[in-house]
Image 1 (cartoon, rainbow, N blue to C red):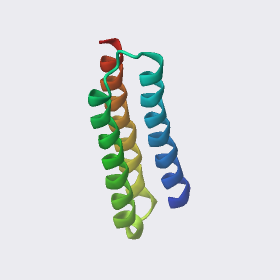
Image 2 (image 1 turned 90 degrees about the vertical axis):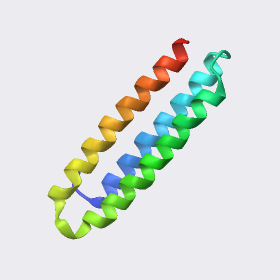
Image 3 (image 1 turned 30 degrees about the horizontal axis):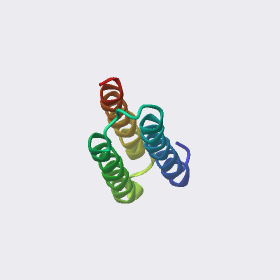
Length: 90
């Protein structure tokens, strides 16, 4: 990312899109139990908080410190998407 502001926006947009996917899955498939999807939403919000905290701590370290944060976002969101897919198929 070219700036902290853009990275924060990317994180916000990515996690927001994931939460929208959860709500979409609940609407499309009435068999999806909200008790199973609520922990995914909580995990996404926790991930957001962690990443923003890491960004704020890395500001003084330069742009190279933001690459691992972006990679963590992608890796953790992929896992959450996988978990959502499992719930949606059940």
